[in-house]
View 1 (cartoon, helix red, strand yellow):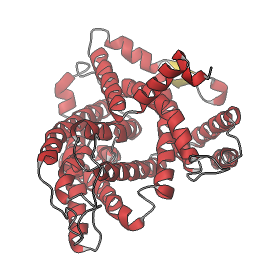
View 2 (spheres, rainbow, N blue to C red; view 1 turned 180 degrees about the horizontal axis):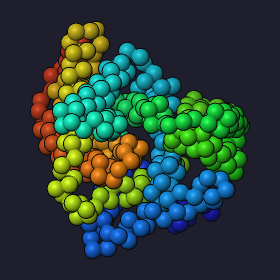
View 3 (cartoon, one colour; view 1 turned 135 degrees about the horizontal axis):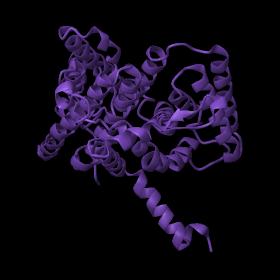
Length: 419
């Protein structure tokens, strides 16, 4: 009997399909963050803090890290590997292959990073907290998993091209966030270790293109690339993106599907069920009751700056740039999508969560600003999602014109989200 047709094989395949669903990823993230918040603000909050600071790992390799650091530096690298694979596929064979089609979401992503950063900088400077400027990139990121989950739940009936637009925007957003982390949040680089990491990535690229995928060889090479990137002083998640980016996105050796699909399919359940929820659990545990409590957190300018950047900055950046580009240049949105659809989509990009929490960890040395920024990420992301949800339902119920993107040509028939 084929292993895939046995009861265990069937249940395993069903579980894998469930874990690949965007709604599952968003739900697990939400549950993990809620558990962390409840524990961190319970009578047992000291146990949560002690657990996060517990150090494990071999000191000889400079890997005696806290559990919180392992979640941010280690497990999150799995998520960014999946992001790298997805980005490679989109560039080679997906929505980013057609430069004209990709131009609008790419420009929207740039606006969606610049405006939140400006909103943040403006608020902290007005408040006289120049020391908080290091957190300028916190509201600039978009959480792919959460944003797509909200769209999948509340965007049923909208053109499927809207998901592609959001995915393209979010992937570019996260790629730029990784560049920001590598450039602005790296104190010093150990050149030899960095060269070694890049050499390991090159070795991974060779092995991943061989006739047979040798997992027993790919995994240790990836671990070496990750460790050397960590040793180099560059955030280790960068290694995850680079490793994902060298996976071939076209069919090789007569295979039926690209290896980007195979590796994404194999690793996404691990990213969804383990890496992201554990990171959320380790990062979202803001103790509001500790220290000066709510009053102390509210007094931090970063609280308003991050929340306003995520909600207002993202909305103005994405919607404003898209409206300007489509009105004053020959660039147009995909068939079936109009500027009206981008109001809820722009709000969805304000769901920062994963990458915003990561940048928060890298931005500040003091606990007060860090906790205030984390709370702002949670509040801002929640507000953005709550505003986007009813707007998606309202948009789905409205009648659509035959030329929604206003390019002078009737739109082609569109598949719908949820079909």
